[in-house]
Length: 191
Image (cartoon, rainbow, N blue to C red):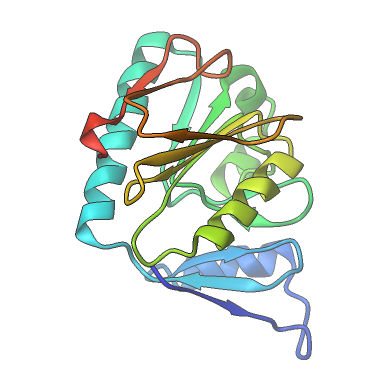
């Protein structure tokens, strides 16, 4: 997936409502906005990445239906993070109590909340550096646990709030720790 960054500062500052409307009026585009207000345009993923994303979202959905502890979101969901960016992780999870504190209008637009957990799946055309910066941005905004899965290297970067990232080479499973209680991701469908 290629990503292109557009800076509109010389023309205008795009506020939250304008960005939401831009996304609504261009549903064929996957758009994000970084903390600097720059718009990031991303191309669709390829088939293999889409297949892997589907496997991931199914595993999280099955776990969440059993646990009933929160809400799972797919890569089409944009979140307005506390430091101002609007991001769409491949998989996100928010604890039920935190989700229920949002108004209905906040839930319908880009929820103004940092997820408790995020997952980014690197595709062949993604820049590892860009995704690592995005993962750090999630942590800076209060995300508790994040996984950056790199299928080509069979590597996972684990991000935890207040800690240095941990790099795992060819792990077979990942634990959701206390953020995703009793969740274990089997990576055999990803590798």
